[in-house]
Length: 332
Image (cartoon, rainbow, N blue to C red; front, side, top):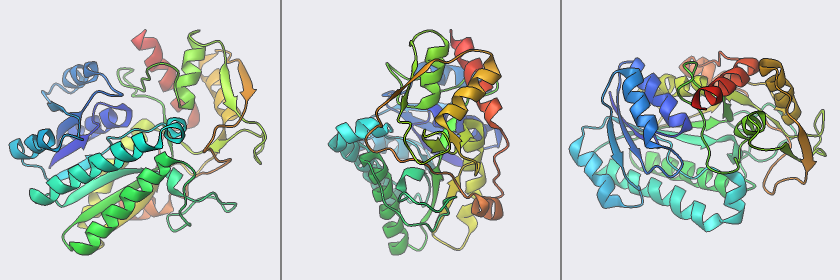
């Protein structure tokens, strides 16, 4: 299968490219390098012993994006491209709506024009309404607290509308929980420019001495230690979930939605303690005010993914921490 992977040089995208090719698929990457680096392509080519087709394109330019469809026979799309920082989305909502929704509409227009009927969309657990009932199942009420999550929810609704109008259109929506970790090779992991928005990149910068301490956003949530609780999943497990999700294209339903997580919630301080245990490095931290748009606790019920596409996360929290640090050490 020829799979177009948008945002394919990013954190999750690059790991998914590896899994696609290792499972016999051909990957075509589109990335504008906004939050990724061209060096990742060079490493992928060397690691996979393959010259991967790559287009440096801003997907807001539909004419440039159309060249990808003209020059390649595309069977399916895995759509990662988009801005992803919750905090920034609260500060700059129009930036998130214009980019995340706009590029997706361009992509879907071209899929329609060129007869590409299959898409896997990287959605987010942020589409769920805050709930006292946990774990979260796929049929829980939806409702967002930030523009990033709202952009994901709007795209989900667009996909459902298209599927309703076109009986041949198949969309798989994967609602990610919190990916961390890195490839076991130490060659691929999460990079961030400046001060990171996500927890693990922040922790490793503290571990490397690049930041003095970790800022913990709030310790007054209704959780075991007051800090936010999330379902963290190893990025390699998440990448493998996309290969499993290809099975859902053969199902009778036009839309299939899956939570992709481990089903276990860890607090911020749990992650700090496990990182210290995995690496032997002390992580100093300070409690600061809550971040706008954050919620206290959520973690996944992943039974549906296990039952329908045979997906189960394999890696534990210590492996996530160890692999994340191994990547940081390798990159210098």
